[in-house]
Length: 78
Image (tube, helix red, strand yellow):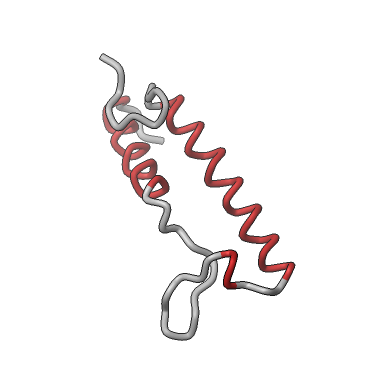
């Protein structure tokens, strides 16, 4: 919905930077710390994490394409 390409790219870059930090988690302990898949025994929650991780990987790939980034580089091609 953002008509200007530069503005759209800025939004996509913010999303890319957020997702590429690898700190997007689904489950947290009572103290508020993120739980890794290795810390969760429930197979259904582990499944949710696997699906979530696959979605993040697919979105990062799409964002790299949209921003014309190669191999996860942080700057667009000139």
